[in-house]
Amino acid sequence: MPEPKQIELTMPHQKNIALIAHDNKKHELIEWCRRNKSILEHHFLCGTGTTAKMVSTQTGLPVRGFCSGPLGGDQQVGARIVEGKIDVVIFFSDPLSAQPHDPDVKALLRIAQVYDIPIANNRATADFIITSPFMDGTYTHTLMDFRGQVEERAKHL
Image 1 (cartoon, rainbow, N blue to C red):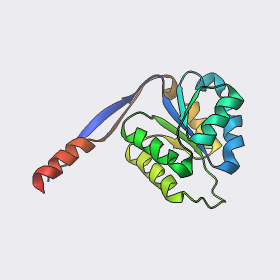
Image 2 (spheres, rainbow, N blue to C red; image 1 turned 45 degrees about the vertical axis):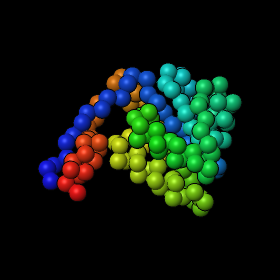
Image 3 (cartoon, one colour; image 1 turned 90 degrees about the vertical axis):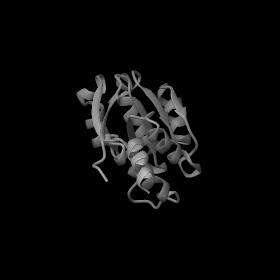
């Protein structure tokens, strides 16, 4: 089978940013959003259930809410990554507490890696991402043409 083709994808000037936080990290994410409100207000924000509601209420930023993470919100964010509708994930995870929906979290992290999506799991990484010059402009990255790969596989199987 031939080498998979590559495609270029361009993130727009206004990024679609998913905000997620485990319970013990929600207040840390809210504080981070407050500190970065002047940047975040120029982008489109979404997030999982309680986190989206809390960020919106406590910062005044508009955040489109999905289901709670354990109820499918992590999977909704992952699906939007696959659809090309999320450009950045800010996920303040709690590495010291067991999470009942850990398989969903791992699936979300995996799909973000597959689609070459910047993902921050802590404040330091989020600070690096939000202050990157790429946040203010477009960003083009290359990844495998997954649709073309499926078509090629279907021909040979």
